[in-house]
Figure 1 (cartoon, rainbow, N blue to C red):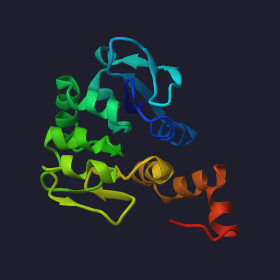
Figure 2 (spheres, rainbow, N blue to C red):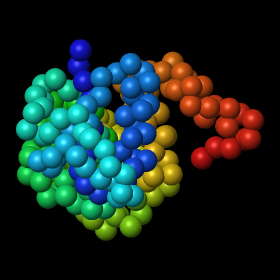
Figure 3 (cartoon, one colour):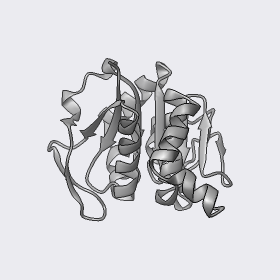
Length: 194
């Protein structure tokens, strides 16, 4: 079974790290949280301690059909400055694999140079650091262009997770997740939509 990779490090945003993992695992997908640090034991930007499934050196890239990078400025900058992470992203892109990032995470994709012909978004404060991006999108919360999906920030992480579900498993998976997470009830009964 092919697997999905979630890169993690100290300083990632809690919601942005765990929401896509939760949503994709609800669909029965195999998702590995992989530490880009030497240790499996990490802390989010909100001080939540957790243990990753694997370290970066333990992964076999061919086993994964896609990857995701959560935000949190410190975590994103750590990954942006990690040559192994940049090389992995570049290789995934060459192979047309799914690549996603949210909030400050898209600066990692920018550094990898894979947004030069793409539309993308990020947390608004990161816009200036998205200098290699062909078309920066200000007015959408989630942007998919080809194999790359980017999102604005923590408040919309569930929408990025739903977009990943749609890309990987189709519309029925999105409806299943919306029902299972009560999002459809909120949207229907309270007329609340982004």
